[in-house]
Image (cartoon, rainbow, N blue to C red; front, side):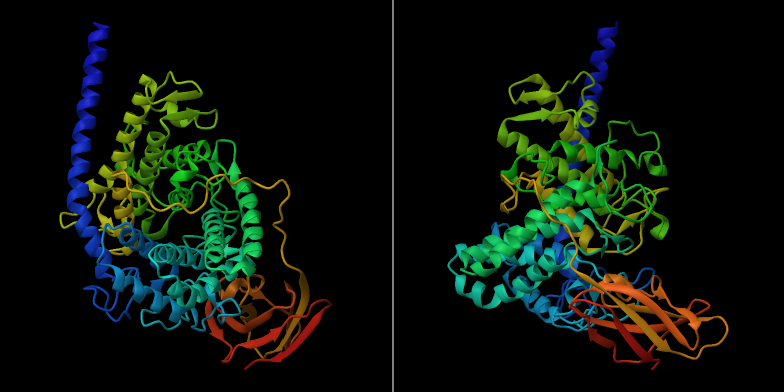
Length: 574
C-alpha cells in the first residue's frame, strides 16, 4: 500500500511539473514579443511610450505619478541595451543597429552633462538619472550610484568586441573607445568609494556594484589590449584584482549568503545578489565561486537563503511548499510602494537557475558541496556532497527538479501578468495585482533575458574563467586631508545650516543626510570634514527649517583640496 501511495504521489508530481512546463512554454511564447515591444516602446524618439525622449534614450517607465519614472537611469538603460546588443550581435535580431547607435550617441551626450554629482572630470559620471531630453535632473536624490559607468561600458564593450570581429576596428578605436575609457577610468579611480545601492537607498559598498565594476575592468583591459591602448591595461588589471579580492568579503558563511550592502541596517538578503549572479554569468567560467557564477556553491546557497526569506511575508505565498517557487521581491524589509514582489526579481531567480543548468549540461556533471548542500537537499533529501555525472540517476533527479523549480518562478510571474502582457514594476503581496510603475522597461528586459536562458542562449564570454584572488590585495582609500568649513549666515530660531557636496564625505549632494554645522560661534557656522586629497570639490550650504530646504544660490562653491595639511574655507551665504 505504501509503495502504491508513493507511486501515485510521484505520478502526481510529474503531472504537475508537466502542466507547469506547458504553462511556461505558452507564456514565454506569447510574452516574448510583448516584452520586446514593451522595451522598444520606451526608447526615444519613436517609441510609442517614450514621450519627449531623445533618440536612444531609455525611459524607465512612462509612469508620471506615484511613482514618476519618466526619466532615464544610466543603470537601467545600460542593462536594457546590453540585452539588445546581445540580441543583435548573436543574430537573434538584426534590426537593432540603429537603436544601438542612437544609444551610444545619447550616452556620449549624457556623459558630458554637468549635474549635481559634478562635471565629467569631477564625479559627474556617477549621476544616476537624467531628464529624457538629456539634461541634468537637479532634484534631491541618492548620489552617486557607481554601477552606471560599469554597466554602460560593459554594454558598449560587448558591441565593440563584435565590431572588431566584423572588421570595424577603426570605429571602435576612434569613436567608441573614448566613451568607454571615460567610464572605465571612473570605475578604476572610484570603485572603493561608497555608493548608493541598486535600489538607491543605502550609501555604502554594494555587492552588485562591486561585481559589475570588476567585470567592466576585466573587459576593458581585454578591449584595450585588442586595440593597442596598452597604457591603461596595468591600471585596469590592478584594480580588477583588488575588486575581486574585496568581493570575497561580502560572503556571510552562516547561514550562507552574500550580504548585499555593507551598510543599511537590514538583513542583507537582497535581489541585488541574484541579479549580480546573472549579470556576471560567463559560461566558460563554469561553477566558479570566486566570480559568483550562477551554479557556484556560494551562489546557490545564497539563492536559497534569499528565496526563503520571502516565503512567510507575502500573502500570495501562503500554502506553497518549501521546495516550490514563491514570489520574491527586493529584500524582505522593503516598504517601498507597499513592499511587494517585483517581476524582475522573479525572473532573475529563474534566470540564475537556467544558467546553472546550461553549465551543468555543458560540463556533464554537477557538484554538491557543504555550502550548496542545503540548496540541493530541497530536491533530494537523501543527497550527500559529491560530484554526480550526467549518466547518474541523481543528476537526472536534481536537474529535472531544478528545471521545474526555475519554471515555477516564471509561472509565478505569469500568474500575475495581466491579460495584455504588460509588466509593471511590482505585483501586490496580498493578491498579485500589478502595481507601482506600469510598463517598466527593466521588467520587460528581465523577462527576455530569462526566456533566452531557458532556451539555452548565452552571452559572449567576458573573461571570468581561471581568475583567482591574489594573496595580497589593496582596498585602501586614497589619501585624505582635513578641511574646515566656515560660513557666515544670519538665521532665525528653528533654522539650521547644513553642508553638502560632490563627494561621499560631503554626502553626495544629499539633503536628507547633509552635515549639520555648529552654531557655537554664531553667525559663523562651522564644521570639519575629511576629504580626498588633491581633488576638485564642489559644495553648497543649505538652510533646513521644519523639514523645508533652502539652497544657497548658484553657482556651486568650488575648490581643490591640498595634497597635505589642513585647509580652512571662510564663506558668506549667497
